[in-house]
Length: 325
Image (cartoon, rainbow, N blue to C red; front, side, top):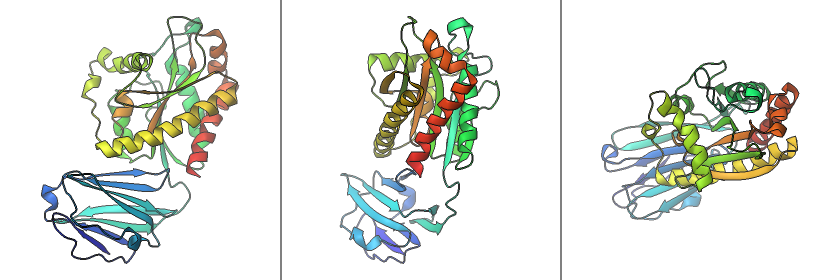
């Protein structure tokens, strides 16, 4: 067991391998945030208001369960980056002064959970495109094929699997309740002109380009249309966790955009950071995929044809699988 004392000097540092115990003068008076990056098997633990006065020997924490531990001093607080070995699960419990992380071996089969979020649905058709095709129908079809592609290797949960309306705020909550490892929101784009075509992928960012801001504004307006303020969907992760999740999402988005475009013979319109409410509310990495432009005659042939929908889902699944296995 490793014991780290905050608000003073470190009294004891021991590593027995299966438990990491972080002791503070008072846990009740010390806020903490914990996030997990499943792609890199990384637990990030942040104590934003609890400085550590004495350095520890990070290498002494290596064990059967912990590949590496790194402490980060960022002024008034402390962060821990704990990289787990493969096929290790963890659980957390607290006492009045301790936060205890316990480690266990786990079955490598289906160790990750992916949440698939087909955009819009029910009374919300989304974008209306070429020959009046509806975004909600296209993205649900692709999402179902994606679910079928992934379910053999992952735990897969869909925010909707039928033509029903799911409030914007509820979508990330579903992912948070099951502690999903990755949030994949599926959409189809539209534009004032029918000449734009291609696929693009978005990740959550507090700052965005004017173009990305317009796309996010359209998707976020769903809540306002149906009595829900998207501004009420808050970012629940700490600042350091936000930056780490953003870093993961950017790399994932870049691979996803290239994978879909290359596999489908579509234009790769790249990746963009934007303040999407549905991504903002999820406590982990995630992307929003715009499969193509529903009002473009070239893209629509790929979006509504069942064989192409299956192929598109397979391309998305291949990128997900490559990042987790």
